Length: 85
Image (cartoon, rainbow, N blue to C red; front, side, top):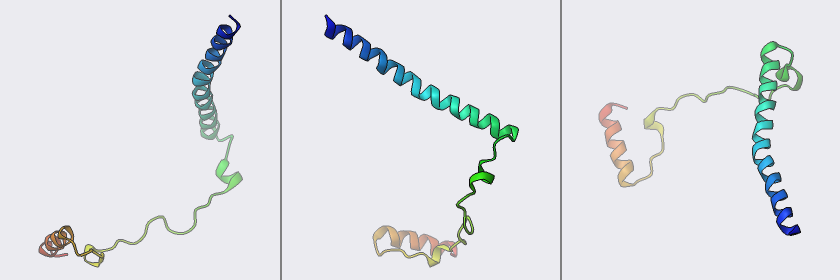
């Protein structure tokens, strides 16, 4: 009988973990969002960022791409050459 009560207690703990972890994450995210919107918390100013350089690379024309010599590549190359690229 003691093993049955231990199993019942473990099941309750697992259920609390399954419900509690997502609930805790949602509450923490809501708290963080609220204080950032209100201006009371400035994480970028406090920690900084790791952004260096431009966000996007310059565009490359299709004709400059390397296409391996397969049937699909030849097909795509033919289409691009007809389109004037």
